[in-house]
Amino acid sequence: MSSEKLVMDQGFAPALAGLGLTRPYKRQGGRRTGLVLLAGGCLGGVLVCAVLMPLVYVTISDMQLEMSELKNLMQTSRTATTASPGTEDRENGTAAGGAHRERRQVDLTPEFGDVYVRWGREQCGENAETIYAGVVGGGHYSHHGGGNDHQCLPMEDVEWNKPTGGHQHNSYMYGTEYEVNSDGYFTTDNMNSITNPYNYNVPCSVCHVAGRSSHVMIPARLSCPQGWSMEYSGYLMSSYYSHQSNKNFICVDGAPNLVPGSSTDQNEGRLYLVEVVCGSLPCGPYISGYELTCVVCTK
Image 1 (tube, rainbow, N blue to C red):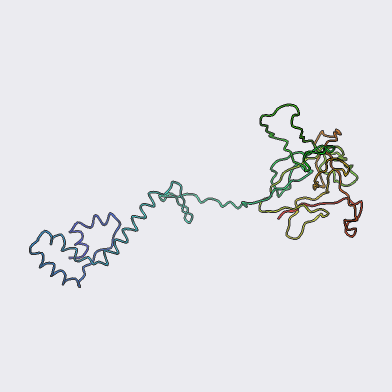
Image 2: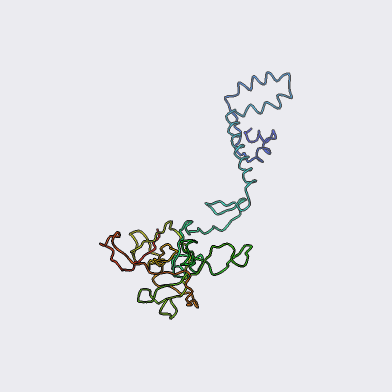
């Protein structure tokens, strides 16, 4: 009698087959001594012998191997049952349960970037995303208090929270004008046929450049260091030297835009070209009276 037939005869095959166990139990000739001893002990218990006699043919090593396979099958079954819908096999593009899923396209967009302000332009360059466009704001040129920096204020989707009309809080934000004639400094290509930016309000844009983590504004330069990318270049500008409210230095694009319809001389926030005064500032590379350039670089 073969080992497979023995298992079938004793009713074990259906149960084992249901668990995915296919290795047949083999009769071990070396165990016949145990069979003889067991047969002698079974004279007083026919029923016990009927149950135990077939098991002699299954060695301990075979039982351990089958139990190991059974354990692996049970773990695999649990994993398949508890897998979340839509869980994908990254290697073969299949979902839990074997359903085929179309392979997702890899997103190569960098997950990091840097943000800078482009003063004087309402849009960022081709390699940067314009987060929003706005106008340059700041404190009044004649006030002692208020902020000493320039702000890029958005022109769209302005939001308020419990505003109250009138002036109760005594800190103010004003628009900012160019206080410079054309005189060949700024390129007029982006001024919509206007040749003189004097008294026009200054636009700005907030820019995001992907794949770069740093930016720097370098005064007195029109090019970037090796390994850095130029975002734009222009002129260094700030407030008038004798005004009561001093402002930070900003790099204004050399080919600026103008805010349309803003040529009225309001004289609130005012931007001037910055000139060199050498003395304490070394007169070697710097020349008194020259207007300082600037460049914005990213990396």
